[in-house]
Image 1 (spheres, rainbow over the protein chains, first blue to last red):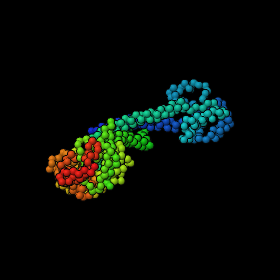
Image 2 (tube, each protein chain N blue to C red; image 1 turned 90 degrees about the vertical axis):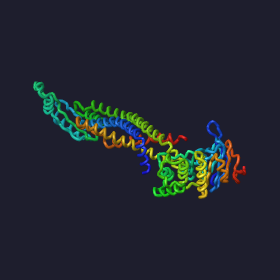
Image 3 (cartoon, rainbow over the protein chains, first blue to last red; image 1 turned 120 degrees about the vertical axis):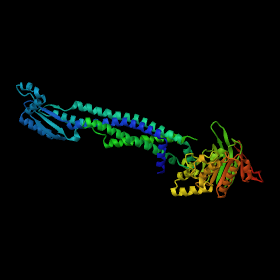
Image 4 (tube, chains in turn purple, orange; image 1 turned 90 degrees about the horizontal axis):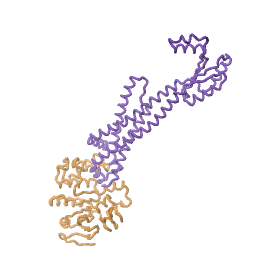
Length: 285
Length: 232
């Protein structure tokens, strides 16, 4: 309680510096928060894309009923499959006509239906990863009676790459922002320390341990960090809400990411304070 | 034995010697004056006792603590047993007399109730009960030194070190401060006073250690108004 009172008194004394420190830290954390939010949303898009992943198996033209049934049985024996839907050439043509809309007369001029019969296969959610999809697709290609296999190979690969790049960017931004925030806290605490040099000298003279001397300054750093974290989270949420009202399905940082954000901010604040305290307490009068 | 210097030398960076081969001991309950010209090594000798400095050679033993083996934590604990006052008082101007005296007790982790009782008692013993809520700039030099003494005595130390405690005071006030130090000594606390004020030191007929260029040149008891009997 004594240390907390001292820390609050210190913040009050260094009012302008404290406010400046909180604002700079908030800006730094905001930058990191924006990148984390972007990552969270990209991941959400990727998750959504994975949910929609479907493997379409096109059957050979004129495949016999018996051959189609045996192929179906073989496909059903493959693990990880959630559902299989058979689409005959007529249904395929109807879908195409729907997609063409009022230009569907072009299709009506066709003498016969050129579309093949197909199977639309959905994997169980936990197996909708790229490698697994590719594995199943390759297996399906080997089966007799299969003309071609298609799945959203191209854009899922691109999206997965973007998410991976963002994970790296997050780390880089985290490092840069972390160093900036650390230096800010460190200098603020150092200025407070110099302003209270006499107090520290007297405390050490009368038998205060380093911990006793350091505790209020560490708490002060922590309070700066906590204020900046709270402010930046509120601003990020307001920003997210504004975007969410225009683009539905945007997501805020998940709980794990928020926890990381809080721990990161507090760790930077404590380390910033510790750096200055170590330097200061190491100095001789 | 409360305090012992064993062949202690202290040299600062650049090779300046502040103390040369000093050996001395101070018993529990003793009152000792340490005198000598400016730069003779008085302040350095005091700093070696509260381990603000460590010897370049030799060893200082303070109670159970040995200078060469003391950790940072030991130094903090030692300083709770050694009270120190300075010529310039070193009070915190933005704290009241009461709050200044609270500091060592707070640092030692005492409870609020105990702190309040002890601060009131020690401020009473230095005659400042009525001025306990005054800030140092509102107090006279003598009163500020009394607050500093109260702060140094708050944890009932075994020894009180005073570095030129009357250097900033007029003769009458200086005499009162010496009286206060004698009172403290009568209460059982050893007192070591570094001073230029040979007259007061001689008048009080106490043990006097004379330093010159970092060496002890005399160590004895002053008697009969300043006739010094040297044992070294």
